[in-house]
Amino acid sequence: MRKFAIGAAVSGALALSALAVPTASAATPDLTFSGVTVYGGKAIIVGITSAVKVPVTYTLTRPADLVIDYRTNAAGIALYRGSLSDILNEMEPTDAPTCTTTATTDTTVTESCTETIVIDPYEALYEAADATTWKAAGFYGHVAQDDDGSDGHISFEYGYDMWGGLGSAQIKRAAKLTANATPEPVTKGKTLTVTGTLTRANWSTSKYAGYTGRPVALQFRAKGSDTYTTVKTVTSGTAGALKTTVKASADGYYRYKFAGTASTGAKTAAGDFVDVK
Image (cartoon, rainbow, N blue to C red; front, side):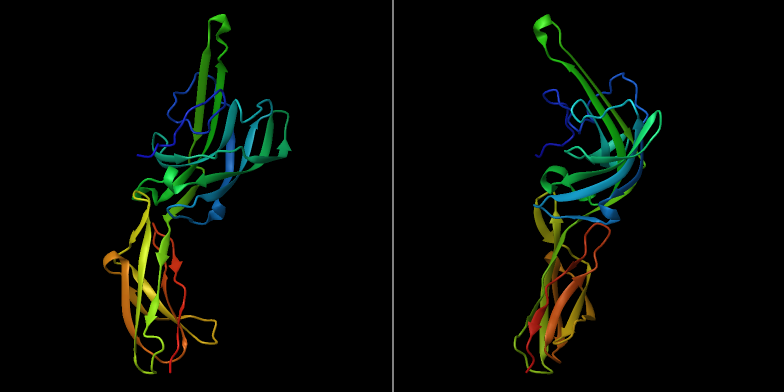
């Protein structure tokens, strides 16, 4: 079973995932996170092997005397599923953000920040329920460690704060779609059979599996044209199989197009050219 990636501090450096560690008694700093945008507001489509880099932009206002060094403390935006009191899955950046100061007062500093959350499907996504709307939260973590035991004493303190309700991000399963028109070539007026398969990522098995019962458009583009038009709608069957027939009328390309769902990204198959005699 894969390790659930809510970690802890290691070797005196602050790990950015630490929800499982009890909060220390140190005072919470006065931080304000605002203007959070995840992946430019687009849905995040994730397959089974390739990691997806998700840019996150936000504004952070902090006390002027608080230095965030990303060694003994860190701040940023996390994505989580569930509620703050019952987090079912969570992801944070692994590297420090890039921040530019935009305003200062005697007591505060305001910064415009950009960070990257890397979503590795094998390490971060575990089940179908992860294909949903995730929430964005600001976090602040800090560690104080004395591991010099020469005086007969060591100490370790860890604190973590999280502020929810800052935005959202849709994570969807990637889909695959194929199309094949036969016979090729075909006599004008004769029947063409167009087959294909609609599958989508299964993060539990790290494989693609058939997506059944989904409407998929069969489209045609005549040779010399740049525009596809929908011929009919086909419903995916067992193992995501697609099959329908049309009358051959002219040279051109046939393809299937899937509009996507709340949990699965859209996908368009490559066009298959048919020579009509």
